[in-house]
Amino acid sequence: ASAFVTPASQLSGRSRLAFPCALHAMPGATVQKGAAPNEFTVEITGSDAEIKKFGKVVYDKIFRDQKEMMKKQPIPGFKPGTVPPFMMSRIKFAAIKEICRETSMAALEENGITPSEDQSEIKFEFEGVKDGDVPAFCEKTKWKPGDDITFKATGVKGFVGGQSPFAEPLSISERLN
Image 1 (cartoon, one colour):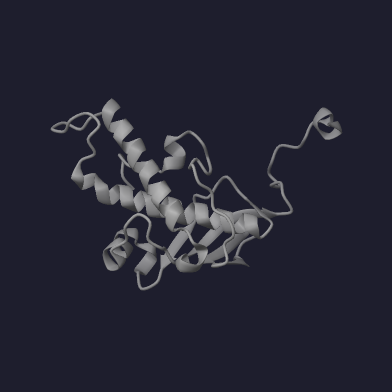
Image 2 (cartoon, one colour):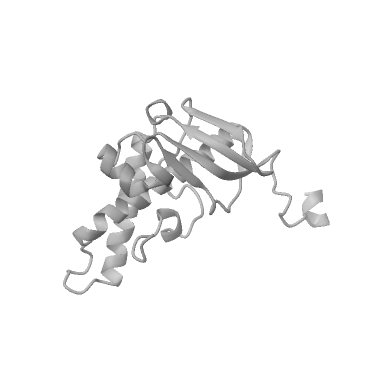
């Protein structure tokens, strides 16, 4: 993780789907119960899930957010608003993680599972790459924004039947409305 590159969802101040396009109909997704309660394993076949457009939107959003941040906090030796070349791979890594995270949560929703806000423990696996190593995935596949991503996500948290058991209980007035 880079001190300079922040996922688009955090930069925009929203926790989910802060992108101008949403994911729909995920035929390339399978969701299975995970090892712990309220944890699931999601497998996404990129070419079947049709996430190309979404992936390009996510990458572009993160890149724009980084340019804005570089205007406010320029790196010495670069014009304000210029994203240094050494940061481009970090932006790509952040985009891939965000695409995988959002796609996993969309797959849960399509299976009637409410995703948890805390998705900090998701682990991603890419075919032929050890330990969810995003830089190795990029190097091996030569991934570009808009390309497919096939992956397995473990530790995706969600709740069957709606609300989290840890959520604040509704007040009497909220229950009556």
